[in-house]
Amino acid sequence: MKFSELNIPSNILGAIEKMGYEEMTPVQEAAYPIIAAGHDLCALAETGSGKTAACAIPLIQKVDPELNAIQGLVIVPTRELCIQYVTEIQHIARRTNVVPFAVYGGFDKDIDIAKLKHGVHILVATPGRLLDYLYSGVLSFEHVKCAILDEADELLKVGFLEDIEFILSCIIREHQTLLFSATMPEDIKKLAHDCLRDPRHISLITERKAPESIDHYFTYQHPKDKLDVLVKYLKEEDVKQALIFCNARHVVDKMYGSIRKEFESVGYIHAGLSQDKRSSVFRQFKNMKIRYLLASDVAGRGLDFSHVSHVVNWSMPRGRELYTHRTGRTGRMGKKGKALTFVTKPELSDIRELIARNKISPCWIGKDPLQANNSLQERKKKKRPFRPNRGKGKQVATP
Image 1 (cartoon, rainbow, N blue to C red):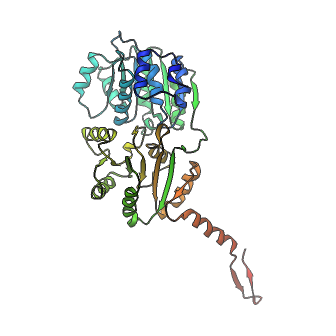
Image 2 (image 1 turned 90 degrees about the horizontal axis):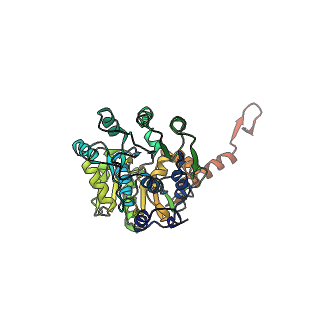
């Protein structure tokens, strides 16, 4: 379905078309009529599926620009997601008088407070900064019509459930609540039960294979050979932009020192950097001023880098969900992408489970250790060793 087939005001439709949006994605097609009709929604959808626009378009339509008050509230887990989400809303609302704004930790509070007093219609926020302003009386949710929890499973990973429930309890009028998550753990089920009223449910990820837009490559290497293999791979590939994920800050720092010797236009980002530095790197990468970005998982969740052609897991992700979020930085909105994961001997059992559970069709660069391991297991099963039976003077097969 096309956006032009919906009953969207011409000023918003014109902004959407200027952004290059014509055909609706599956999550947009499923969620838009539910949101527009005012129902609560609990949606399971993978990152890169277009859910930000699915929420933002009807949310902007619900706002009364003449009312100088917060009417839409969006809660996200990270500063980077906060910036990304408010930017998307700004683009969609550019031909309206709707004012979106973002608040998050690390930014000047005086500027925040001045902007909030001047007038904001849609507020995008991280939980910590939101609580700070609620406790200090800076914010009022008296006129909030719609609250959105994006990346809800990530929001609750660090024990934010009570904080989120408190924030939502501060919305004193009857309102619409939209919850988006990539998975449905027990905390999310509890939140959906406690905070949503007769919600509609949609799921676009259950029993789905890994996105067909991503080719999943793996390479089995000794740790001392990994850097040479990575450099060779990046030099041989047609890389538009690459995200290289590491599991720890110090590994990101070390890799940055190594990669910048081989390539130009290299950057790095992790939670140890100042907010100004992280924001600067984030903008540079989105604007393609950085080609190779070394990153911890601060960049692995929800962020929309539309030009990333390659994702590299220098370190094995801790869990299959994290693998999905990392590799989901490429192959977005139907574009093709490649993901390369380095595997070492201790990780073989983990990679076998990941491939099976994520329904991945793996392409191995070099040796396929899983096939070799399978063959070894089969040989062991077939080989029945003989041991001497001293009592009868002959050999018998042991069971």
